[in-house]
Image (cartoon, rainbow, N blue to C red; front, side, top):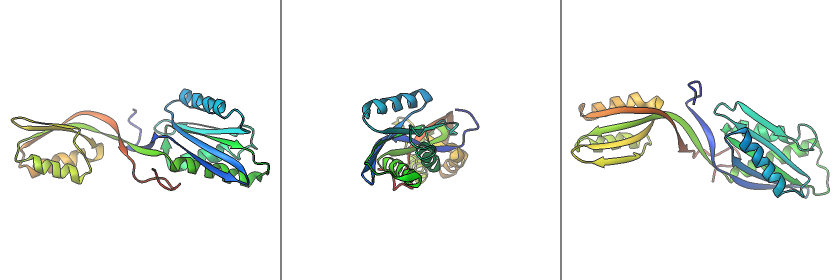
Amino acid sequence: MENDVKDSYRVLLEGGEGEYVEKRSRFIATVRKCVSEEEAEAFIGEMKKKYWDARHNCSAFVVGARGELTRCSDDGEPGGTAGRPMLDVLLGEGIRDIAVVVTRYFGGVLLGTGGLVRAYTQAVREGLRHCTFGRMRRGWLVEVKTDYNGIGKILYLLGNAGIEPLESSYGEAVTLFAHVPAEEGERLKREMSEATGGKVRFEKKEEIYYVEKDCSGTSAGGSR
């Protein structure tokens, strides 16, 4: 990824489905991870085939670490009453690489412009409530090597930072690998050196992006 991408951003880990009913009209929101425009368009086409008998299949998606690609469609609803409100929910939650299709089965009662905006917005929020999110973070893959006297102190520092080792090996020395947030790398290196009296080797192997489980939920009511 490019250097101008911010240190972290939210992504969808597991999609879901939610439903909202307004005056007998059913609004079914299906949410899926899509990392390209082609994936998003294929997903939208899939939903239109699945719900071929529905009155509308409105859609919105946000692709790219900076949200640089966005699209939305009212699919026959009055302009600005479906796709744009759906997209606004996704942008408001700061989620990237995500697409949503809201399928409407007409209930026989016209909702009006305000009613449609509210219904499509609520449907997307219901869909997001049944999804799992993560946070893509810019970081380092590091190798840490120390002696048996120092490993407890190293693990304590990692634990305080919310970091779990990816793997570890115990031989003449103890070696472990971990993903470390880029903004915390130098501080951890310094603290490990101080805690072990310099008896640690902290080596950055490569700069990476990695996914953390996001427990902050959404304003729609939290992740599953």
